[in-house]
Image (tube, rainbow, N blue to C red; front, top):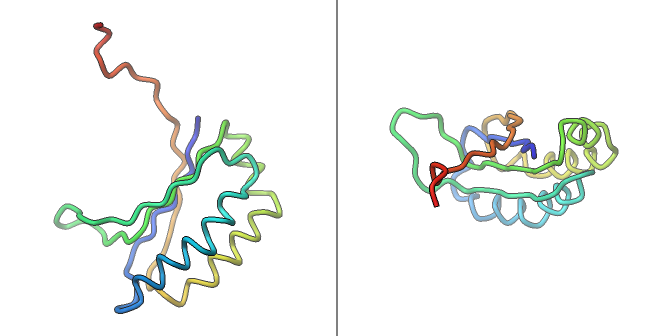
Length: 114
């Protein structure tokens, strides 16, 4: 499995935080859930962070079955709907967002012991 993650760095405009997260729930989540081949969508609102780290106000993750599925999703017309939804909230924050694609590692956290 592969996860494409968006890191939103910067800050939500003062006093607009709840409006921002409500708009994410109402506008972005439905568009992200409709992405071609999307298996699961998660959004995180940070509540704590280490000192001297970038200000991150949201992290989004979408799981896909393969790298090819991500490429197809990004080329799909459904991505345009997500871009339009994103444009509708950009006035609520200052900053940027960028993406990472992760591959889930199948590690045995028990150390192989029963």
